[in-house]
Image (tube, rainbow, N blue to C red):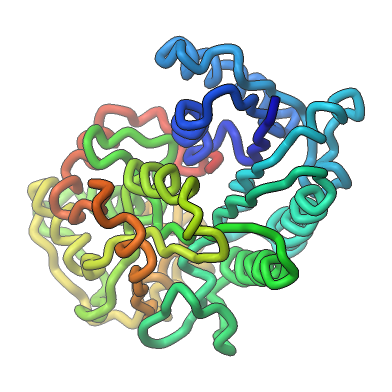
Length: 362
């Protein structure tokens, strides 16, 4: 028997990805390393997954652990099963843009280093599937290709910088012979067909900001009309990783999983405003001043529903090449839908599910 190991379950991507990769890998046992305080949620989510897809029932073992520890903090009683792991899916990370530097470093960088050690120590290891982010680009100005990484760029926050450092570790391991594939999702939102999501962040903050303005005319700080946003629906990210993960040609490659024709920040706001029945008024207020106000005026972030950390991404000067992704998905039927085709579904789901917390785990 062979096994695969996943970190990041029961998160937003891991919960959707687990049943797909098991369905494609007959006879493989999945081991999900779960933090102890997330075990109850993981058990509930796994029960729902197996009830909906009984063909994979009984093939997933949830074990408590900590990716920042040797052997990922998993109980030595599972050592025999872990030795059978031939594939690792590393999704776990701190995604909070406002995360303190020590936490982001420990989980995103040190945790990835421990995962790499785990991979090297497996006797029959075949592939690391590593989930990075497009925003390893930091403040790079211009077209950021899938082969680029260290271009001397500066970073918006500790999330960007630690994910950059983690991907650098993975690339160094690949150069030393570790078989791996790197996936760089953009800003992941809900399902393009149903709107379903587990969290409201990224562009959802704009929708929340617009909804909290009670007048029919909604005011937003003016943004550069040419700057785009790397928004991407979860179903595309999951389907793309599922397809690419089994290709021999994907070993050693990096894939930008984002919209090849992304909407501008203005287009995102205008689509949301139109759906909400509002007209936008763009105020020529410097975004730096807006961020400063959100940072220093007590309660303003909560009142507007717009975290200060998101402001940097409205003026991000980077676009993302998706050449590898488009080439290797050609003929599979997996394509990223245009944002305009599903923006309304995101808002409909948000309206129907106000109980979902914007700070939910990814």
